[in-house]
Image (tube, rainbow, N blue to C red):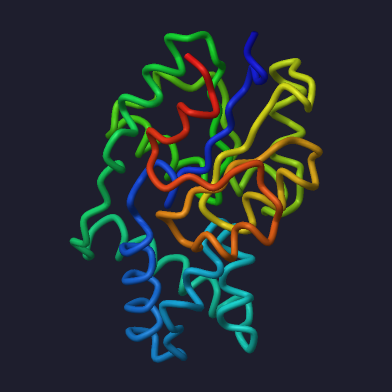
Length: 216
């Protein structure tokens, strides 16, 4: 019998290799607006948070006007100007197909806005595999558990039947706050040592490693 019924994935850095693009776009946006340019480490630390939470952390001296300018510039950089590749990680398509075929329900809980998630679900073709999703403009930002709690309620899943898969400490802490298990992935924003600080059930090093913990 399967331990879990619902597998909740983060998106950036977990399914999509987009951390490098996020770093480049945030840094270039700050540079263009003549704001302090955050380090790569600083940007990696905020990946997974909502854009509002991320910007207030990176630019604590900013105000709403600065944050709105950054949001607009970042969106333009990400969608139009920056050509840093952001493919799915190798094995992701096989992973979600196998989990779906084996009867798991799959969901997404992401720091992306709804428009951004819908775009990548469509572009990658992965949207057909997910039964539900929550975005940062629909619920409280990670590590608040609201995204997960809403997904559990929508799908009528008990907390002990759900697991969160994510590449950041924010993902794992969100799972802890929601009372569900978590598995960290070491190939995204945060490394294994940092992830283990949140006491996940495991840390995996490639997408297909997840199949060792989710029998198909």
